Length: 194
Image (cartoon, rainbow, N blue to C red; front, side):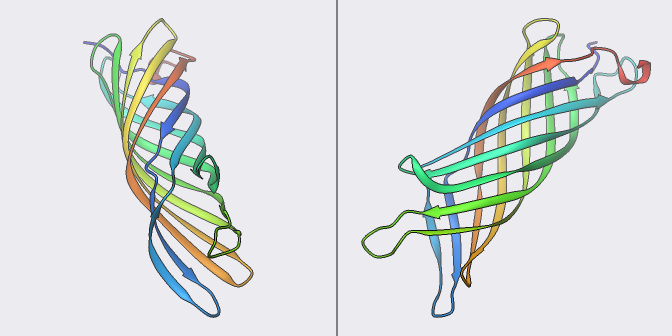
C-alpha cells in the first residue's frame, strides 16, 4: 500500500470563471446587475504538508498560497486581486506515483478595479478588500523522486468590496475553474518520523 507523504512547494496557472454580479452605490444612483470579463487568469505559489499515520495512504493535508488573479476587458483594465489563501483537506496516495487531495480554502486580499471609458461613461477606478472561499480536487503525478505535475478542478466564490470618491462597488464572483502546475517535494519522510 502506498504511503501518503506530501511535503510540497508548488506553483500553478489557473483559468478562472469570468462572470460577476455587481452592485454600485453612489450619491445619486444605485444599480445592480450582471456582467463578465473577457478573460480570467490566476497564479498561485505555495506549499502543502501532510499528517498521516505511518503506513497509511490517507491523511490530513494543510497548506498556504500566495495568489494573484487577473480579470481583463479585451486584454486591458479590469479586476486585479492579490492575497493569501489557507487550505485544509484530505490526501490519498492512490498509487506509488499518484496522489489525490481534496481541500477547502479561505482567502483574503486586496483588489483594484479599473473600468475603461466608453460612449456612456468616463473611466472609473476603485480599490478595496477581497474575501473568497473555494473547494478543489487536485491530482498529482510524480515524474521523478521530487518532481510532480498536478491538475486542479475547483469551485470558487469571491466578494470584492471597493470604493472611490463616495462610490461603493461590490463585485461577487462564483464559478468553476481549472488549473495545472508543477510541484517540488522537499522531503519524502512520513510526518511522524521527522
